[in-house]
Length: 177
Image (cartoon, rainbow, N blue to C red):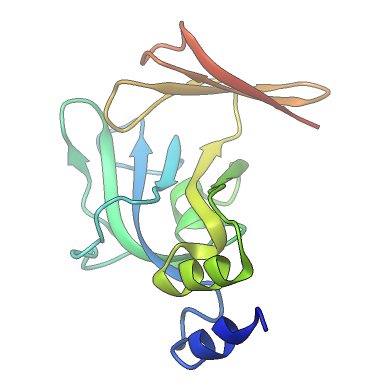
C-alpha cells in the first residue's frame, strides 16, 4: 500500500510538471560587452529566486555589466538534458561552438512518496544546478566573480572547480569517461 501517495499526487499534477519542464532563471556569462555569442557559461541554478522578469525579446536580450561580468538573465523553462524554451543554449553558444551541459542532482530522496511529492513541489526529479560550459580549456569565472571552472580535454574530460576567480586553488574535480 506504499503507492497511495501516487494517486493523490497524480490528481494535482498539471501540464508542465508532467513533462519535466520547470521554470528557472537562466544566467548567461559573456566575454564581451555586447553579449554576442558565444557565451562562456550558461547557468540554470537550483534554488535561485523565482524569475519574474523575462527578457522582452529572448533573441535580442539586454546585456548587463555589473562590473564583474557581462550577463544576460532571462526566465525559461528548462528540462533534463539541456532543453530550454526558446532554444536559448543554441542562441547563446551559436551554431559552431560546442558546449557541455553538466547537471547536478540532489541526493535527499528516500521513499517513493518523497520522490513524487518533491517532484510535484518543483524539485525537478532531483535536479539541482544545471550549467552549460563552452567546451574549451579556458578558465570560466562564476557570475559573482568568486569561483571558477575549467574543463580539461583529453582521453577523458576533467571538470575542475576552483574557489578563486582565476583557476588557481582547486575546490573539487571530476573525471568523466
